[in-house]
Image (cartoon, helix red, strand yellow):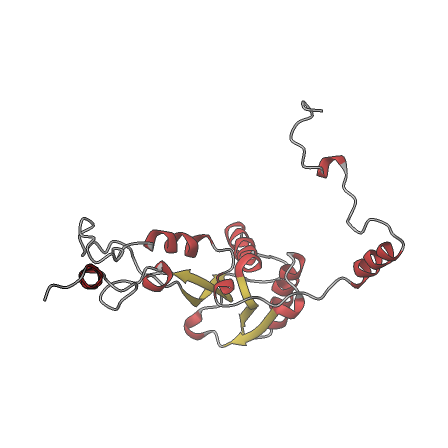
Length: 226
């Protein structure tokens, strides 16, 4: 008995669907890299300890020019990317208090909040009488790029190459201002109560609530079109 045309079309459609399914690869299957570069090349954020040792004899003598420049650069580096506090460790002895005061005041004058300055003493083991400064910052990095183990001409699996997105991840790790932002959102500062009161009063009185701008803040690049 010959099949009718409707049954023939149904069987043909079923065979076509099976044939198409046998060639397809499931999206993000486990037999190749994920399509998300952040999964294939994760950015790792780790704490890094920075230290500086400078020679110091007495508060009235201060630091040598080279050490003074190194000190200023170190403190500026802490202010830009330091986490927590900066420490001052001086050799124990009769001049330890004066030495701590010198470095503490110099840091405070450079803008370091006093509550972020930690001080302490240590035994001058091995005759090392230098003052040590230290702080911790976070560094973002990812594994080196260059995995060309898969031929870029073979695309039947529909997966990206292992090296896909690695350069982008490296650029993000290098450019992020504060690597801690990659670990989670930072807490917000408290609101400005004074500004809030001004905006609310303007709103109640029907006045504009936005801050007024000067001509320099208008954002206009040129007045040719005026």
